[in-house]
Image (tube, rainbow, N blue to C red):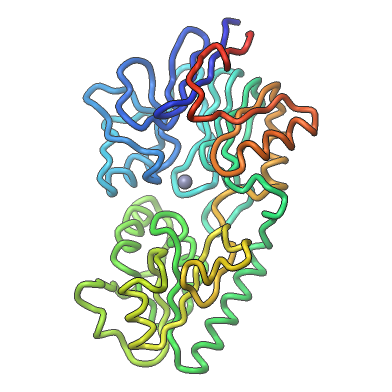
Length: 333
Ligand SMILES: [Zn+2]
């Protein structure tokens, strides 16, 4: 086996077995392969003509709907295995030979139409660590769904509408899927655009009324309704208007809702930690199931989680974007 190098800079660069793969590149990849794990904007780029891009068809379609043309993508290449990472529709982890396993963004539990991150053993693991700190232990999804339904029910009793706010790709479709029974139901236009791609790929989201914020802000019904809307600050123009004119209750969904004071910080009335990432115990399990010799951490609590892994006996370090020296990360094969 040759040497494998993992470096960071405008994406994560992997050189192994004599080839180059850039994981979630920020710009077109001139030589070698590009891998796009999922269609969130910090993970996609506009591909150049002839660029070889590995991505799921769902990721290709979602990226295109958001203005990022990945060109002709493939789901298979020699020595490459894609695995569902459970984060959003189409999200994938990648294993390169038996050598490198990269999670992309990964969830540690099934939710609605999404599974949890599947894994394979590899010698080197690159994992996201967004919530890699012990205070992030998310509640069971079923419990959270019960609490939200009871909150909506109470609001309906008082004649007040409820706005469920989440990231427009991923979280918003989960919300649409988990809370379909409230009538009338509205989808904010930005959510509806992403719903469309889900429907094409067979995700059974309920049909509902379209809400165009430029046209419909003053023509929503009086009395209770539910709207699935993009996450935005409750003090912003649209949300402040919905609150003032209709008495809307604003509910935010994010893993960061574990933090005290989160609701107030985003101007929401309530918030719930419904996350599309692994919580801390799930991250530890994810690492154990890959059973790597070396782990590189990225995003969020990368330094803290790497240090916890070292205490557990793993060789782990953050893949810092400021670290550009290949030799620093060159692993003997
Ligand atoms: Zn993501």
